[in-house]
Length: 170
Image (cartoon, rainbow, N blue to C red; front, side):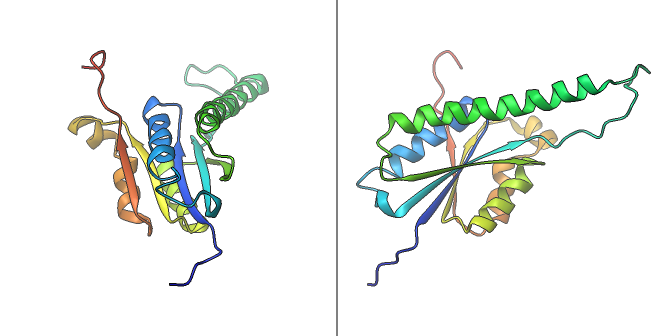
């Protein structure tokens, strides 16, 4: 069997939730351990999706004018969250032995389900790893499931990781 010099791409969708950080940790231990994959031939891509920027009106709902400061503050806030998420993810993979693994970080903007699907396609990901928020039936029906949407629309295999419930969560 012929070896390929092309790197395997593992795309991990991360957000501010503990579930996504657990999925990243699971990925590192189960897909990137020395027995599960060849670390030198793997690229880990972390993807964080910022919510789409709102369409700003010069007036808010109460009729007051929005100033440029408010808009700039809101934009800074979303940038700060992206930085925080990537820092948290970096601490997780730095604790793991990832010396031989290339790690790329991407921050997208838009609807998470759409951005993740497009990124998986553009990057030609070999696998997509996502955490599950484990919403109940009604919440999932109202909000939709990002992981379910991605599983139906991306071309690569999708691994959805459920974080084990602790006694504090029950």
